[in-house]
Length: 189
Image 1: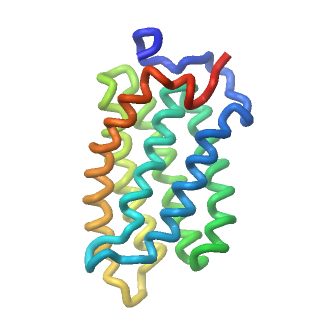
Image 2: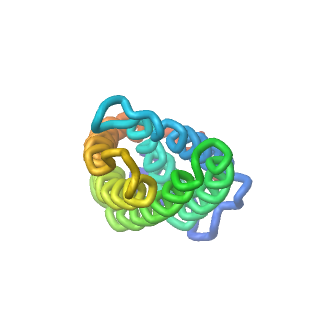
């Protein structure tokens, strides 16, 4: 890991928005694809979106580790705004709105948990933040998107949450690989 500690690579002053283009673009791709893929069940308890959405936590966690929680929140808010607008064109409005509300709540919770745990072992902050935030994100999203519909959303939510937890564990591998390469994620001066 760079510098041998868990502090962000730059000072507390916010990273210019232009330097955050990689995480913002990654967040946009993750949200839009997840909003589209959540419409397609694999079976009675799982949608394709469960496999793509956890990448949003990876994006936030890498940004938080590299340039801090202020920049991570900026990426979350910018990614949220752009993705909701694009998602409205690709998915039904109810899914786009549910995704936006659930997303920002989950992201802010992940950022707060990560920041609180950042000084511990390299894996604790991203894993615990993602697991806790996935519970909130999943509950809010599936309730707002599918409550009152024909879809068995409680079963889908349970299946999706299980995959999100599995993905949180699996995504520790690329997170670990990126730790010594954080300069590639957000170039800092």
